[in-house]
Image (cartoon, rainbow, N blue to C red):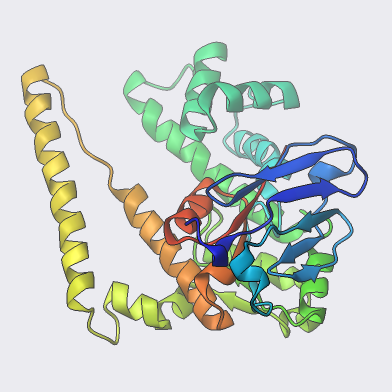
Length: 337
């Protein structure tokens, strides 16, 4: 990770001198929460990477290249953008509203989340939406006609309606993140490839692509969108997912080793559970999801025809940041309010 080719954005100063952001040793650049009236709703607009600046108005960034870098000519770079939290900050703008719409549709007239209530539930549940609902109905009381055994299906039905409501809001009324269009235009005007990643994200690929379409046909003609199909057709996707090409022996061995490790964890957990007389199941979905995101990032770099360490991921998700860190891709974390 600490290589000359990946040294990026060691110092960042906002043009209005009201806030600063720093990058840590793992090449994570954290943009802090709202520190002035414009920051939380605006998109970062000033980069310098390997001596090639992106002149954005929101802040000015400066790379700190090693001596090895300064002796070499500037390298090509590409920008990869997530949809959730980057192209559109839907979960800040529409999540609470979507919950209230779901309550209305299910006839839960007594349930209404104000901004303070929603913020408190998010804080207490660490953003876990099932836990948010449980905490809330434990506080105000569950529907009187709901048997105790039906609480879990009830929660899932609320989340299902909330998901549908949020998708409708995203497609119809929620705006793109302010500044993102200028950011993309500036990059394209400087010949820097812009890749938008729709293959992963909480909103799903279909909704993500619909959001991307809000950028307009002219802008879309200048960028590349990487979804599930593009990932599967990429060289890395074919190697990892085994579609259209056989995996190398090393890749096959690595996959088998991961499966064996998961199976062993499950076996040990079951042994402990039997002693404690409880049931247990190890969730391996997070590692599978991380693998999918890694494949998306590598596919994005491949389509941009730029090495992974010369790509910058602008992410609104922790999972995207974790995947980028795993493969040594520099990354910028955009935080919502």
